[in-house]
Image 1: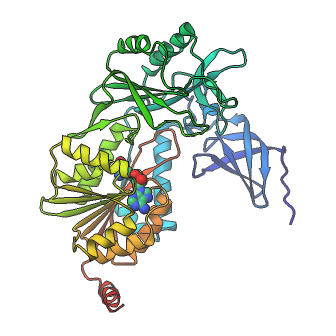
Image 2: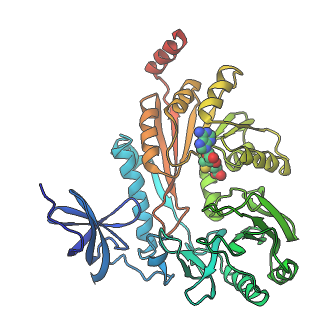
Length: 475
Ligand code: SAH
């Protein structure tokens, strides 16, 4: 059957649903259209940009009738930027959307009975002030058509820089920092980097802030070996209250990777410090660190609460990154074992354990699917509680298999993608575990992302597990 919709067709459509990335979804005679920037409840005129057999995409041209959930985005460049997909949706509706997404995935993909979920699911934890929450920003530096030095953000999926220094979810002082650097470049004739010719010096400006400490770090990424008059620049930046670290990072490669490997200190110290709860972290330009510290604390508190520790438990933290959750858990557990694939992250985890005087946490480099069975089967390390915080693709089935074999009392699953969480929950529910608590934590207001914590407990009598375990031993 031929599709009745064609590219460039104009349609008028009521937005009835929200897609996985926050886009509006509407139907024209049963044909589904995905329309970015359209808010649920809007009636919009849109131009079809791509028509597939059963569904298509369209670009919002005009809002004929505004949804009750539509608000004016704080950023006047919200549509061009694309960093925030749902800034035009009221925050209360955003939270409801995130709740629905988690709930639907757990029911449809996870097979969790609706009645059970309604009983155990807690309301999503949103922010009181859902702006200015990001503690990290990376600004590309380039030139406009007239040759002026500019900085801002890349227009959605391109490398064209849209000048803009005041992102509504970033720190207010970023603008001042950027202005100092751009004026300095003009004054001393420092060139911005040009991707096409691979010429020019200043590529990116990284700014990180310790929310609790107020410490600020600036790292300038350069296509060269140093910054001429770098001392002068550093002196000017040092005037900003809270400035703690000014560094540069050398990246001479033709690459989309922002940071280089070598770094140099221009002023102050090479790292900043921040706290999540009572745990102190040292953050260098290259370290991984959660970007929303306020909500991270709530996320980890939820994970800790779900873990229900009394002090004598052995806890595993799989996919532990720089050990943030591990160190949180270590305050309440007997032993914590963290597993992470990136060696650098494990070095940071060990260092962070040390600066906090935490001695009951151990960290292993490797894949969770290799390390966990090895430590369990060869070294006989058991688990009372297992916490996992995998990347978007979720856990490998073999990891889930080993987890079940270890028979922890509780599994705390921290997830950044409720669809893969639901898939893994299905496996665990089929293996003697049941969902006891679920809570979304809004780590990324105005984006379609949803973080969620799910507690699963071992069922008291799980006959089929025993059978499965015996079979395992026989094999
Ligand atoms: N829990 C951490 C980070 C979680 S992000 C925090 O809150 O800060 C997921 C982490 O899983 C990343 O650090 C990634 O490097 C790691 N990872 C990805 N695949 C892995 C695997 N197969 N085994 C172990 N770690 C893995």
